[in-house]
Image (tube, protein in one colour):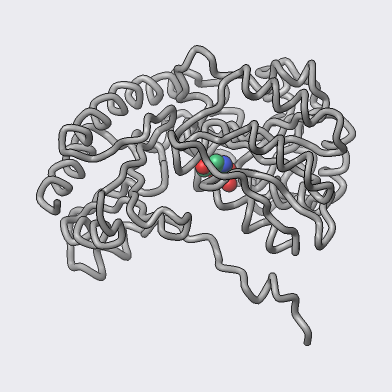
Amino acid sequence: MRVAKEILDLIPYQPGKPISETKRELGLETVFKLASNEHPMGVNPKVIEALIPALSELHRYPDGAAYEATRCLATHLRASPKEIVFGNGSDELIGLLLKIYCRPGEAILTSEYAFIAYQISAQAAQVKTIKSPITADFRFDLKAMAELLSRHPEIRLVFIANPNNPTGTYVNEAELREFLKASAERDVLVVVDEAYFEYVDASDYPSGLKLRAEFPHLLVLRTMSKAYGLAGLRMGYLIGPEEVVGLMHRVRVPFNLNSLAQVAFVAAMNDQEFVKKGVELNRVERERVSQALKSQGFKVVPSQTNFVLFDTGGDGQEVFKALLKRGVILRPLANYGLPRHLRMSLGLPHENDAALTALGEVM
Ligand SMILES: *Cc1c(COP(=O)(O)O)cnc(C)c1O
């Protein structure tokens, strides 16, 4: 059978190296994984408690409309339930947008070093990815993106990760507003991916949700994988105009949010204390780790997220391997076109210390 070149050329998403695999391969007893931006405090005990009775209902199909979870989120965000759609992770929602809005040969617009899932989803849909160069300080260059948008009529969707992974940087309100104004005249949708918004403390960081009132072509994407610590249950959601959300409901698979995820979602949303604790721990560790990396001589990109990107000054893959032998898993970024850099997720203080010590030994 004939298969499109884009499909044959697909390189699957490379997840962080699992702890079990690392222990097995290197014969290690203790391994710290700081490679996937996971929550260092583990699962919220209140979520576990809520999940226990849900386990005995697993013979039933989930609620296809995710009624309780949708109502809970609508209340939390002061949005209409009709403006909300859940996904099996944000990944699924990105894929749905591509399916609905892009035809083969059309394009999405994003930045160099943007979250790689946009490009992978686009390629799987035989859609091109147009990228603007990143700024010298590793930030999305929205002026350059607006420029590209004006020159490429084939662009249908724009992806702005704010803050971005793997750079950890953000775009400010003035920059985003200007881009939204420039793109409003075009027949495009702008997706602002706020996977890490809980961790931001910059005062000029824009709220995508607030900007929606002014810019109907703006869609906000969020996840339960990071600040809520539920990456394993695969939950993302999108807030957008009813028309867009309605189409996404039509195209999605019927039970894309499984029944455990639906129960966990409500329990997690109703315990904002857990999120706050994690964010506070992250704030302290982000500052401490960034300073420590700098004093070890690394160039560190200022982060607004739960990870830190730094330049090893050499071959990142080699440093990654040397750290593995010492039981520390960081994330190499050659697949992003950043062969010298590593990304370190912020863990518990003793995990971060182990990584910093190992880095000191390796370098
Ligand atoms: C982690 C991450 C997500 C979340 O992905 P899920 O599929 O919801 O786990 C989304 N966007 C960015 C930029 C991320 O780094």
